[in-house]
Length: 103
Image (cartoon, rainbow, N blue to C red; front, side):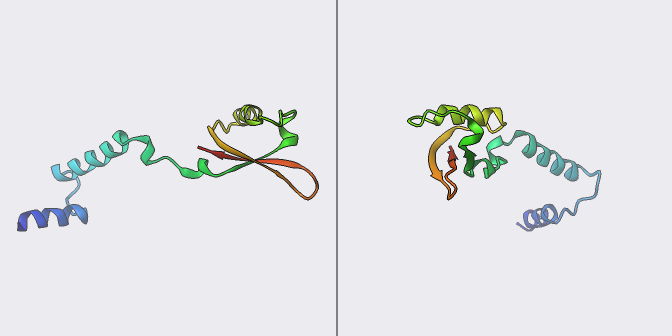
């Protein structure tokens, strides 16, 4: 039991000398974690924030179904996202904006 605790302590505090086989094993494990872990572990949730799109930027929009026009606009501007819902808003000056919530 003492050997196991001693080993864990050395691993935790990175106590092995550089060039030893234990050091090399720890480095290989770290690299394996980086290269073989799924992308979802490192996926930023910044893309899940709502996007605000002005109607004047898009052009003509079918008011009954604005999803396709907004989707095309977002793809053109480099924000290719799947849309979960859209809310139409109008500011005090009468300009129409769409708040787009990605999936």
